Length: 102
Length: 234
Image (cartoon, rainbow over all chains, first blue to last red; front, side):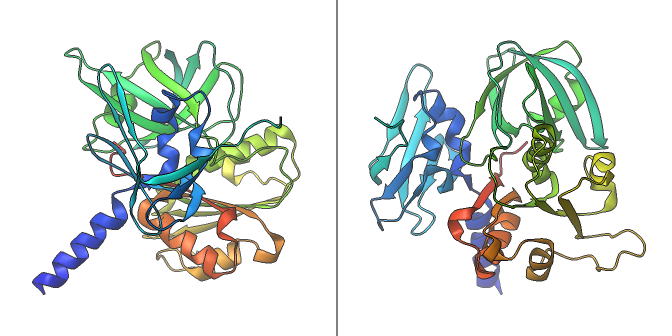
């Protein structure tokens, strides 16, 4: 019973504690001139490619942590300090950004 | 910087704020803003709120639910008065948006105050004179918690609305109260062959469940767009 409760509790945490990558539009908009949430990122863990807007964003950390919706690997981390921003893209193989036609 | 021009109480716990924002660049329905409050001691709290209305010059509307333990929403819905300034950044988010030039049918699935960005889409459709067929499946705890009641009651050609009451239904309502099911999404939505764009907005668990149902019904995952509320909504 106890372990079941713990399991259920953990499941609740996993499924209730995140938002969509859409939520990164504001914080990333402070750094980039274009909307990065419409870019396609490729996960370094499992290779899944999809819009940044679809990543699972956790913010109960000192910043934003965006995880792959398939493997839950960390794709992007962003911390906004008082006079600088840290952007960690170790978990993203690439970002494909929509651009105007040349 | 934005200034409160007026407000409307939608329910006892939900208020629509009408704000004037100088230099507002315009927006698309589905986009949101980040609202930042700074306390006298310098402590800052920031929350994202969906824009509730279509683009209309330098005036925007946000619909805010008051969460009892929230840091920001009690201020915005109880203390924030006409003429008061607030820091608003946006519009942001280019993915969960409906473009009035789009021609494919649209399915909106709302859970509670998740209706807000979807309402912006319905209002933008009307504003643009679009004839794109829309369906809305609106899941809400009880009739008393329905937002924009009067406006939703007015029939609009090409817009079908079905309600799912989860705790308490109006008298004589055929469907017993209960969580949204595949049958609700199936009968209130479009067949996948119509290739509709589906927008789902609500609490994380709700969005997760509905997005899974849509994919199980045969909708292409790339046409199912979601926006979840996080745990720090307050």
